[in-house]
Length: 290
Image 1 (tube, rainbow, N blue to C red):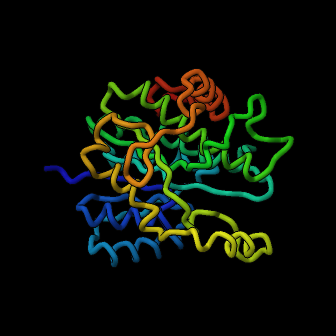
Image 2 (image 1 turned 120 degrees about the horizontal axis):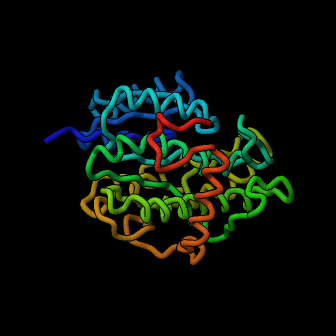
């Protein structure tokens, strides 16, 4: 049996690192996708030590940069002919409105548009696997979210809850549309709520706000390993290789919000995402001109 190839975004810490360790421990070959090469190299050494596996590779890309994602995807396709599992774990939270180098509001830019571009660039190896999986780490916060057309970049009226909830709803709508477009081509897509994990907040502990948030929420936090458990389950279990439920909590099927099941909204978000990234789906990645 061929050794499966799996990729985890945001793999240098927290749930991403915990996911990497367990996937490698299962016998998979794992690519850690990290933004920072130095931190990624340190995390890779830790993952090798904890998993007992040396089949862990490091690659770098900034999910806040379309050019960086494009370069990474080209490099990945040159190295590997297939991808069995993609775990979209990376995510950010910003208290103040920030933008990516492409001018996107950072949370929708990294949490959704960055992964939208990444999946586009990796679609060829995902399809080549014959039966592959995309596991998308969303959040229960999606239930408080809306896609704020015509201003998803929140140039007016930004707040952290509004921005984060929108990006997590976008994760689920992306999963819904991916299932519609690629489910009959052997790609199984699931989204999940990991629970509250301190390392996933993306809020600096050095600020007064950050210290207050951590003090308030620490009693409710679970470990990174516990937070990663559902993503690991969907990556490795038989159920994860079936169409099944769109959304999972604690490795069990769960009901997302009604907005997350809105096919019209999912299609509208898809078209907007294509326009924002300049990526036309249905064409081979190498043929796309931005």
